[in-house]
Image 1 (tube, rainbow, N blue to C red):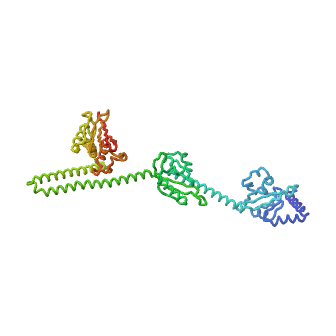
Image 2 (cartoon, rainbow, N blue to C red):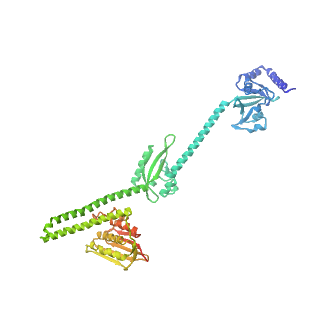
Image 3 (cartoon, helix red, strand yellow):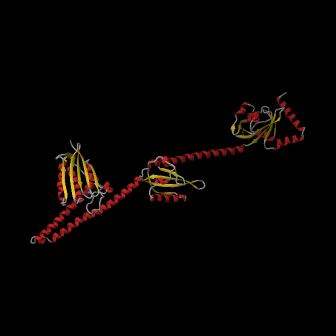
Length: 521
């Protein structure tokens, strides 16, 4: 019997059996022709019968479901199980794969009209004796489109979130690398410190984590500043300012600090983040600049006074000498008086010249225009000459003014004029601040050097001022005379001639300035 006749007979026999029970037939008919789902009867390979929705769909995509060569399995692109393509249907009849599956419904894809249609497919056995199955295809194309859109949205959202997290991690790494970062909880307990902060304050991370932030502070003013900052932060505000912190060994560090309260989605503060930038060098430089400015102001006030005093004296004494000029020839008393005025004018002129020369020397050194004529000299002869030249400054008979040298010749390389000026300035300084006791100049020959010491039993230098005794605009005492330029010239000249310079002093006992020059063999 031809195949088509066999199919027709099978269909007629099936319908005949169904008609024997009218309720079943009516149910079968209503299911077939009233539902929107596509329903067919099949032995798994050929279509025995199909409702209008089923036949119309395949007709629209160019297939006749009742054609003897029509095979439903050839229309399926994939069978999808639990959201994944299920390969098992390739090794067994598709309908048996569906029947044996754990899910009642599977998804299949059918191509037609320039798109892929997605159906939920279910299979149930209608007649075991004939192996007739009821196949139901429910169109879920739109639903799957929505699912794909949703999945794509989730994928894009996840990707964007991951990208955002990656970008944020780079921002955090940049902040963590270039700044000093710390975090603490609301009780002020440190929960994180980066390596840069540990390095700046000489701590190991484990020495800080778990400690209170007060470990960074010392003194009431520092704690008060930190307390004011925290009060502002707990109100949800960002605090910016300069904090003075202490390192592990008590050293002071200054940080330009931003403290940020970290909040959760409910706007509740959960953590405190601090970002520091080390400005210690800048703060110290500012302090030094202010000290220098103050010293310069005092210096110029002193210089103005020093310039004005001898100038006024010169003008006054000269004026008085001129007034008495006509009486000089006839009156011996007038001659003596005029001579005294001229002597005082001369002395003040010398003081003024010395001051101006000192200022010019400093200006030349700062501009790099000072010329040194380095040659071989006898250090003993140069020092003795300076000692003798300063003897006129020794007007206090209660001072023992003495010179000592172990040898008569100690050769060194230097600029002779400037070396004598160094010794002269040191002697002048010693005599100026010594009212009784001694001023002594000593020379000693070492194996490879010549040591020159200028020692006095004067008022000495306070220990806190010893470090800047050679600065050009600073005076270690408010003594009311001098400009503090002499020792600065000593230091500059000594450095230029590669002569080391040192000072030791005890306040109230005296001072000793030591020069060490390389000896010529």
